Image (cartoon, rainbow, N blue to C red; front, side, top):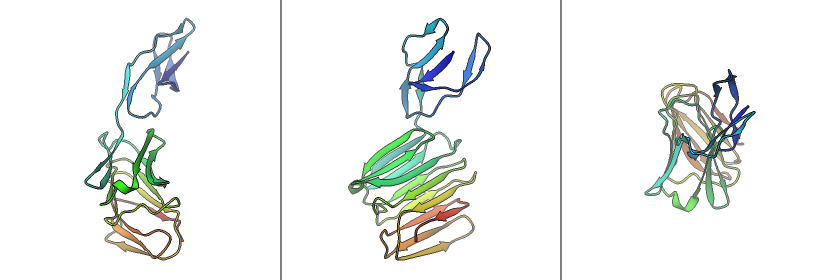
Length: 193
C-alpha cells in the first residue's frame, strides 16, 4: 500500500486495512491528486487535496513582503538569495520557490514569520539585493527565531542592539552593503568577513 500527494510519497504512520494515516509531504500551494495504491490497484486521478500557501510573496509599490500566512503555527526556514537579476525566496520545508526581479524591489524587503521556530538566511554570495530601504525580519513573539547572513566580505559590519532580541546590522563598504533590522530573534549568525 502507498499514498502520494501530487506525486510525492506520503509517509504512512498507520495502516489497519480499512484506514491509512499519513502526513502530507511539503508541496507548493495548489490542488493535487491524492493517489492511493492497494493490492487491488491505484485510484483514478483526482484533486481531493488543496495545499494552502504557507508563505506569500508580494511586491507592492517597490516593497517586497514575505509573510507567513498559515497563522504562524509552523517552523519557517526561508532563504533569500539572488540569481542573475532576480531575488529568489525559498523554503524547502514548504515547497516555497518564488522569484522576484531585483529591479522591482526599490523600497524595502520585509519578512514576517509569526510563531514557530523560524530561520531567515540572507545569502548575499550571488549579489547585493538589499534595497536602500533595508531588510526587516520580524520573527514573532513565540518560538526560537534565527537570522543567518552569509556571502559578503570586507567593509565594516556594525551591530546595534536595542535589547536581547531586537536591533539592526549595518554592512557598509564591502562587497555587499545594506541594513537588516530584526525583531523577536534569539541567535544571530553572521559568517561574512
